[in-house]
Image (cartoon, rainbow, N blue to C red; front, side, top):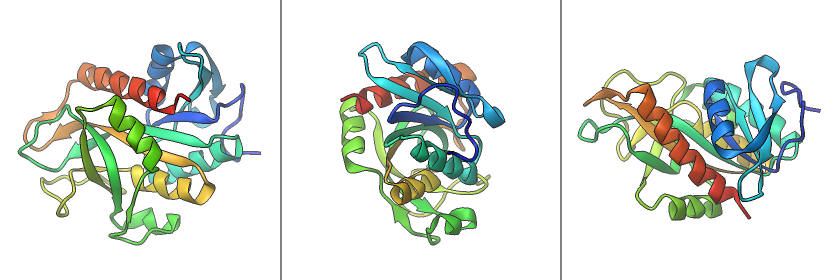
Length: 222
């Protein structure tokens, strides 16, 4: 049995993972027909149901940071999840690019901290599942393909490691734990803020999350 999630409804083999419980509820209402809450333990809201296309899907919040996300994914693997797409936010590291774009993660680079607990050395890059990434590219042809660096605490200054488009707090952990537990994982991130412009309005982030969620659900469909 899982250690942290407490199933109240069956989980699907395919899942969308989000950090924020509120975003999990929003996407469940957007993507699922008659969603049922499948977890509320520890405030990690999760919902399961069928999409309009008839595909079984779970939408599960993972909490904040890599350690929480890795623990949740380990529980999901025990509950039968075999494919997952992270729909999250990130900070753009290129001050010349404004926020608002969607970033398809082609690789996630560990930047110290807790990454070692996932078996990832600082500077090591982990790639997403290639089939899921390809499906996401088909669903989001205008999204940017790039590398993300995962930190325990997001950087407060502009710039970052060479070749890195954005920073987040979960993608390395999810890709590493997915590799360990035989769960195919990919990620699409909303660039929610940048040094050049600041943060997007909440309404804009929510609209982008719905777009990313619809694409993630379609990429997980048979």
